[in-house]
Every structure is written in C-alpha cells, then in structure tokens.
Length: 213
Image 1 (cartoon, rainbow, N blue to C red):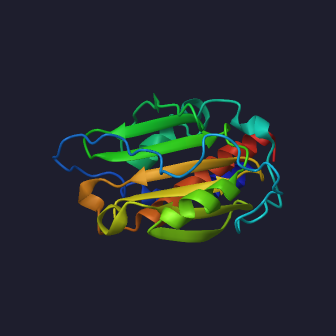
Image 2: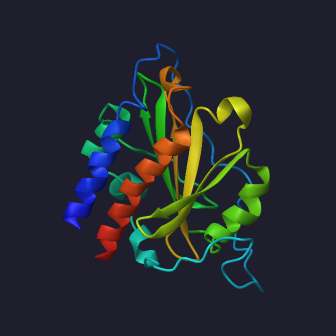
C-alpha cells in the first residue's frame, strides 16, 4: 500500500500548482454543496443501486468515514502539495449530509472541499437521481482505486471552468464528495474535473489505508 500511495502522490505533483497562484483578488467563500441531494434516504422500497448508478463491486466499510475529513482526508503535506500553501482545514459540516471540511488558500483563492456523506443512505444512487438532471457537466470516471466515481458540476458555462465535484461510491450506501475551485489565475488553463479526479485518488488511498486494504 505504501508503494501505491507514493505513486498516487507523484501523480498529483503536477496538480500542485493548478490550484495555486496569486490572484490578487478578494477571498471567495467556499462553494456550496451542489443542490439536489436529499437530506434523508430515498431508497425506501428500492434496491441499491438505482437511477443508473454503478454498483460498488469492491466496497469499503462505513467505518472509514468515522473520523472528520479535516483530520483524515489529507496530511498537511498533501494540502501543501495541492494548494501550494499549508493551511488548516475548516469544519463546515452539513447537517443533512455529513461531515465536511474546507481548505482555502486565501492568497490564490483556490478552495478544496471534502464531504463524507454519511447521513444519506443511497450512495451514488442519490447523486445520479438528484444531481445528474441539474448538472451541466456530468462525466463518469474510470474506477478510482477500484471505486466508481463521477465528476459533475451545475454552475453553468462560466462556473464549470473553475469548479468541479467528484462523487466516489465507497459502498452502495455512502459516498465521498471531493470538490475543487481553481484559483482565478488558473481558470482556463486546466480542466477542474481533471484536477479533482486526481485529488480524489489521494482521498480514496487514505480511506483504503484506514480499512487496511
């Protein structure tokens, strides 16, 4: 596992400066959670997965989400690697979805967010059923460390150039959302969904390490 983790970290090295860079502008507020995901399970009477969501063939246990993402999603060194600045995570829990953490580089305007969706029991099915119809970007991804994932955004032509969210199914009941807002100086030079997909690999490696996988 250590070798695999190192390989992922090397792959992210090119991402480091994607989300960094001086913008000279005012500090933005962290982006809101994308709309459309219900605050409680909608799976009553339904078999998971549904709405076209893929089945999680190699699930992780719910226990990997028992800690807060501010404490377990990244090391401080990884935050530095991603944002170009070592900053503490800020608790921004969502009462209807789960524990959430924001990391903000106030110099560049880049924002990194991780949400452990534990209060909805539909996993990627809820994302497919509720977020997909509203999305202006919807891109199923290759397996992320063996787990299904989709990149999406609903901010429209302008916002989609700076923001993307990747939802990863850790099992059929729960998912993890990773989102990135590029610094203004990087908008148009990199695809935010490509950046977020790479960073999602880091999160999944951390979760798999917690599971002993």
